[in-house]
Every structure is written in structure tokens, then in C-alpha cells.
Image (cartoon, rainbow, N blue to C red):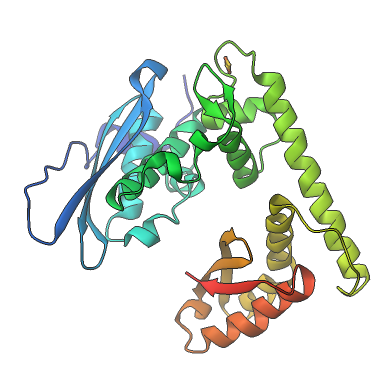
Amino acid sequence: MWDYTDKVLELFYNPQHQGAIEDNGEAGIKVAVGDVGSIACGDALRLHLKVEEDTEKILEARFQTFGCTSAIASSEALVELIKGKTLDEALKVTNKEIANYLGGLPEAKMHCSVMGQEALEAAIYNYRGIPLNTHEDDDEGALVCTCFGISDVKIRRVIVENNLTTAEEVTNYVKAGGGCGSCLANIDDIIVSVQKEKASATAVSNSLSQTNGKSAVKPLTPVQKIALIQRVLDEEVRPVLIADGGDVELFDVEGDRVKVILQGACGSCSSSTATLKIAIESRLRDRVSKDLVVEAV
Ligand code: FES
């Protein structure tokens, strides 16, 4: 018997958003659908979004989910988290937020929260007419787990985003390794690779700290760069902003463009642009790369 929270059970027994949304051809309204999983694999989620075209605001969301208690509850939590948001705002919802909304999920059920996040991405890409196999998804990577069709890109992403350290955790989050088990050694290799890159980024950060950012170092790999940016934000930028009633969260890194979400006092402050340039961009340029440009999203 799984140890579910009261919130999981409440949403499972009383889901308010099950079903489909029909596209009635209403002016200014577009319906998009995102599919993830498959019934053959035990879980499948179809998410329907009703979007106001002018504002890209999600007016309504519904789901059709085939799966267990946590899959239903995660779908309901996802809908609660995204309703009323714009598509850009909804894209920032992470599987961690879904799990947190539920008061937590058993480790072996964390893949249900990941499935919700993926269905949301699929629906938004569908709305925007972007073929799923062209966005940074598992289709672009080498297939690691043939039982569940999971690529190295997807495994690497879930390891980095959730700080996973064992193959068992990876199985809990994306199912890879949970079938015949023949891919477990490859998953271990990916974990080791990510850990090495993180360690390397930490070493670079320490080196930069010791030399006040003036020494020449080897170019960072993308993972090293993201890890170093995250570390500088956590250790040097956020404490300052939090002391002023604000905060910042790293949203994405595209080349030298660092996208962040300003929160609290920073998000509503009229001088947020100056905050970005002075407190964040200059610090990241000093510590990571002089070419970085910080943008609020
Ligand atoms: S190939 Fe991954 S579990 Fe079988």
C-alpha cells in the first residue's frame, strides 16, 4: 500500500477537471492537446488546454488520464497550477511544483509528476505549432531504455533538474530501468557523467573565486556553465536579494542568454532592470563569463 498524502487522496477521489475540451470554433479561442505516455506502458495522460489567443491565457484545462492514484492526482494538481496562467507562465511549472502541490509523492511515483510536466509542454508546443520532435526532448537523444523509449537527453535532464544520484531514482522519475533492467548500467554511466561535470563546474567556480575571476580557464561545457551559473546565483546573488525581500530563480540558459524569474519585491520593483544588470548580470559576468546577458522572463 502506497503512503499517499491527504492531498493526493483528496484529488484522486474528487477530481474536478477530468474530461476533454471540445473545439467549438469559438472566435479568439484555440484548443490544444498534449499527449504523453502510453497505455501499454501503464500510464497515459492527455491534457486539453483552452487558450485565449490574444493573451495566451489558459482559460480552462482538463485531462484524461489512464493510470494510478498518483497519476490522477498529479494531473489534477497540474491543472490547478496552470489555470489562469499564460502559456509562458505555465511553461515554468516543474515536476517538483506538482509534487509539492500534492504534499509530496512516494519516490517510486515521482514519474507521475514528470508525466504532468511533459503533457503540459506537449500541449503548449502543439498550440504553437512546433513539432514535438524538434523541441529539446528525448527524441533528439540516443535511446537508452528501449523498454520505455527513454533517451539519454531525458535521463540527463531529470538527473540535473532533480539532483538524482542513483539509477533507482531515475527509474522512479522516468521509469527508465524499470523493465528488463538491461539499461541500468548505462543509466549509472550517465549519472557519473553528470556528477563529473558538476564537480568540474564546482572546481572551476572555486578556481575563479580564488583568483578573483581573472584567470584564463578552459571553456565550460553547457552543463558546467549552467551548474556554475546556478551556484553563483544561490551563493552570491540570492542572499542579497532575499535580504531586500526579493529573490531570483534560474529559468533557462540559451547560449550566453541567462533567463531568470525575479520574485517577491524584485518582480514588482520598478528598478528591477537595474537589479538585473547590477546585482545579477555583472556578478555572473565576473564569475562565469563576460559574455553573459541576463533577461527576466
Ligand atoms: S531497456 Fe531499460 S528497462 Fe529494459
